[in-house]
Length: 133
Image 1: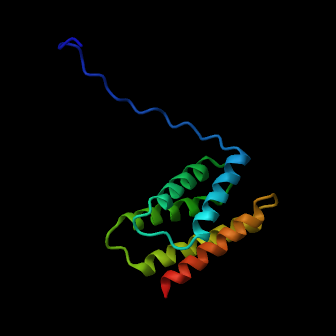
Image 2: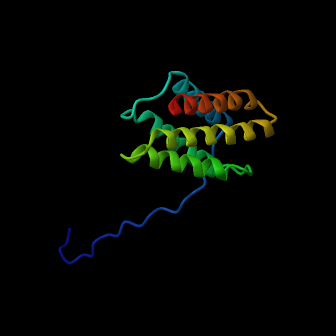
Image 3: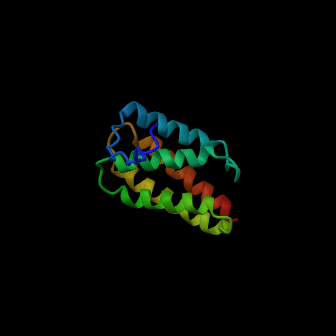
């Protein structure tokens, strides 16, 4: 490279909406249900953080109304999991809120996602309840 050449700038790529298929939605939902059904992930388990990131991207790409609260709660959960001073009861409240919001979405869903979303809601609430003890 020529020493007089300008340094290339790393320009961020424009955000392109994620196109998520039903099959990908189903796989994500199944992965999350499997993760939560296995019990409370450990603090050092990064798989949960990966799932949070996946869900955040999918929800942002969705055109369904009413998902902003869930996206916001996922961001809060991610921040809480990264923070070293997060109290267990704070995590429990966030998980319970996510469960309640997921239940609302499940009630409004008329397709194949109603049952798995209801199950996810119950698992989130159960996990929150277990943490609050």
